[in-house]
Amino acid sequence: MDHFLRGRSIERLDEAERDRLEGLISRHRRLSARTTLVERGEELRQSTLLVEGFMIRYIDDVEGHRQIVSFHVPGDFVDLHGYPLRVLDHSIATITDALIAVVPHSQLSQIMDSDPTLARKLWAATLLDAAMHREWLFRLGRLEAVGRIAHFLAETDARLQAIGLSDGRTCALPITQGDLAEITGLTSIHVNRVLRTLREENICLLRASRLEILDRHRLYRIGQFDPTYLYLKATPPTSAAGAESARQQRE
Amino acid sequence: MDHFLRGRSIERLDEAERDRLEGLISRHRRLSARTTLVERGEELRQSTLLVEGFMIRYIDDVEGHRQIVSFHVPGDFVDLHGYPLRVLDHSIATITDALIAVVPHSQLSQIMDSDPTLARKLWAATLLDAAMHREWLFRLGRLEAVGRIAHFLAETDARLQAIGLSDGRTCALPITQGDLAEITGLTSIHVNRVLRTLREENICLLRASRLEILDRHRLYRIGQFDPTYLYLKATPPTSAAGAESARQQRE
DNA sequence: CGACACGTTGAGATATATCAAACGTGGTGG
DNA sequence: CCACCACGTTTGATATATCTCAACGTGTCG
Picture: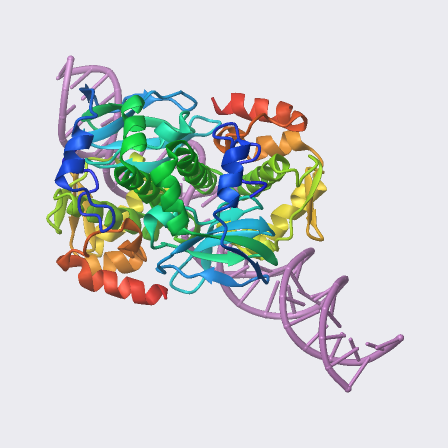
């Protein structure tokens, strides 16, 4: 629960609330990499908080190819929305080995009944997800390949910085080019070529499960990345310049 | 408030709840077509319920082109998520002339404090939006032009049916090909060509502000449309066959 | 060592964008 | 009532981004 809503400008949790949420956890589970936890259409009685590792949510198409609709880092309440929604419209899987905390929906109902303030914060947490969906729509609809990839890398680094998993220059990001393709709506082959140009241009480097950002300013500009939608506490110092400019341009 | 959550399988409202929500409305407003109601970054103190007409939410890119991230029909609580989120990450505008009901956030707080059941239903309503965002991501990421357009038309018709604004064969849909382009991430020129083929193939017809569906089955198949994510009360009879088959294929 | 997943590269095909222009058509003002 | 204008639609020709297919390289793990 440590990372939940950490680094976010809205709805930060106080100690009591954090303890309260901690108390909701019925148990922890270890999952291995590349396994599906929930299938589209399943009814849920519990929600998953990601403690360690990376997970995704995705939707399959006719041929079994999937579109990843969400990428999760530690501290994300992966399917909190499964509580009000009950049935999920997408599947959930791990990318890496992961440690999750399980929160029964009955516990969440108790929060709803007794703690409107905390309930509102949980609600807001699910809406941060929705805000990210919208930015992903922007990415897929308005950016071409380089932009999409730059945007995703910028976003992910920003999120990892918020929870202390990126130092602003490099971070662990164990995803394959195939994963990136499923995120950006491209072929893994094309992702490969785009990553090469980003590397050759000394903008960033994705290799050996690590992302290294060499020129944040240009990365942000190419991805038209403006972190407003992440509702972060403060723009990390290292990225201020880039964020500023991407913002101005968009307006 | 009549149409809010109407036709949805989850979280339907009982009479008392409907009255309660009705009571939250501070006033009504008429908006003219093609005007922006809220700009990205604005802080909200009230939310908008769409009573008549069509509205959209969108995100601008560097050059001022926009990606529409959401399309709203009567009964939609357009920016209910502005209540927990406070600041919006996108803009809101009308497509047609519209009638909206204004609900102050202070009123929503009272619901949160006093009626956990209704609060949960409001939460769920915002998550239906998120589910739609995910399906839009699938659409942009995995479908090509014809599929994207077919999917949007199928979705919109299904939503209009749920609120009684489509009879299952035809409905009023006063959007331009330019709008469709901003929804599907295409050029209006290409949208035009795709609409022509859909017309020539006797699948559907978008003309004179009306959508006419000639072959629902094929429309659904082309768009890989599976209405699960809309959480509708029941699949409308006319579309059952198409829904069925699109579903099976996707699994 | 072999198998397998992932990454890389090349050549050719194709979907969609871009640029340019003509064509309706409904609304407005004279 | 007509002339005109603005806006959306339609069409053509060309350019380009991305996909597809195919092959080969590389590292890891049993």
